[in-house]
Structure formats: structure tokens, C-alpha cells
Amino acid sequence: MKTRVKICGLKEAEHIKVAAEAGAAYVGFNFFAKSPRFVSFDQARELALQTPIGVAKVGLVVNVENAFLDDLLAKVPLDMIQLHGHETPERVAEVREIYGLPVIKAFGIASIEDTKNIDVYGAVADQLLVDAKPPKDAKMLGGNGITFDWTLVKRKFWPKPWMLAGGLTVENVASAIQMTGAKQVDLSSGVESAPGVKDPDLIRAFIKAAMQEPAPKLS
Ligand SMILES: O=C(O)c1ccccc1NCC(=O)[C@H](O)[C@H](O)COP(=O)(O)O
Image (cartoon, rainbow, N blue to C red):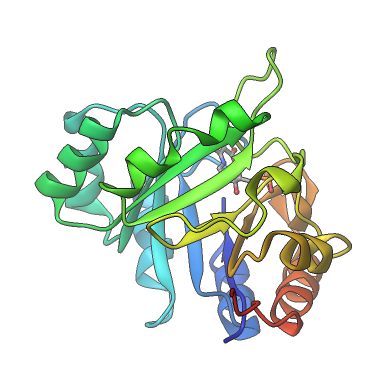
């Protein structure tokens, strides 16, 4: 099986087309207002309607209330919700139950301590996303373009499918897959020419590099 790629923070229909043609399994729309990748509900609706069938449309939110999700999902035809804040396992279960969509729960990892809770979330989330923990002064909980110590998540057998994220690039993605055993990878900054500005050539090159690397069979 080929590695599955999620390109996050897409803002242009043309870039979604490029990602889909190159083989992306997921595209992500970012609804965190302070992000350079932020899209409004109206923009995301247009992008979602132009996303080819077969590519999962993921909505990324950070610590939002139901009222926000009510408005979002009334407007944007999403396939999955990515919770990228400090949501509790109970909140993950609640979002899944209320909205009836699969939920990806993200975790910031900097030490072994940060991996301890993941099993608990594995019981309630549909997928897990292990990302670099942001620096203390960071304004965003993700999308910071920094890697973490991949040995912390090496060949993990969490109860749900998981994605590796955090500072992935065309140069390091093969090593990241080989070292961790990740079958799915996610990125944002590594395919940008400036914060929030995706580069179609980098998107193509990254997906090619990630998919050339066969997702390892874990023993
Ligand atoms: O990307 C953002 O701007 C962002 C803002 C706030 C919370 C999460 C955010 N991104 C989450 C993602 O899924 C990113 O793809 C992931 O953190 C990896 O980002 P990068 O290190 O830039 O590849």
C-alpha cells in the first residue's frame, strides 16, 4: 500500500487539483482565524465543491464550540473533522456523535510524556495525528514547520490509523516514513513558498516522494 498524504491549509482550487492529480488522499481546510492558511466558510464551500470525489475533505478547527461547528457543517460539505486543540476525549466523542463525521485528533509531541494519552483518544477518535509540539511562544498549535524526535512515535501500534506531521518536506519525508513506520503523512509549511502560500511544484514533489516510499508492513 502506498503512503497516504494529507495536504493541509489549502486555499486555492488550483492547488487542490494539483494535490488530487498527484495522488493526495486528503485535503485540509483551516478554520483557525489567526492562521495564514485560514479560509472562510464561503471560501471553503467553493473549494470543497471543487474537490474531486475520492479525496477526503478535512476541516481543521481548534477548541471550537458546537455553534461554530453547526455553522461550518451547514455550509461546507466536509468528510472529516480535525480537532487540533486541547479537546478532551469526551469532547472528541461528543463531536463525533453530534455531527456523525469521522474525527482526527491531533497531538503535539515533544517528549514521551506527550504520547501517554494517545491510547485513551484512540478509543474515541477515528484517526490520530502526531505533530510537533509548538514552541512556548508560538501563536498556533500546528503548522509551525518544525519536526520532533521521530523515535518517540517509532512503529507505534495505536488503536486507530495515525498520521505523521510536523516539519515534513520533500527532503525528509522518506526518512520519516522509514523511521516511524507511518502509513500516512500530513504537512502544510513544507509545500509553501511563504506562510500560507502553497507552491504547486512542491506539492507535486512532496506527494511523489511520499508515495514512492512504500508504507511499511509492520510486524
Ligand atoms: O497550519 C496551521 O496554520 C495550523 C494552525 C493552527 C492549528 C493547526 C494548524 N495546522 C495543523 C496541520 O494539520 C498541519 O498540517 C500540521 O501541523 C503540520 O504543519 P507543518 O509543520 O507546517 O507541516
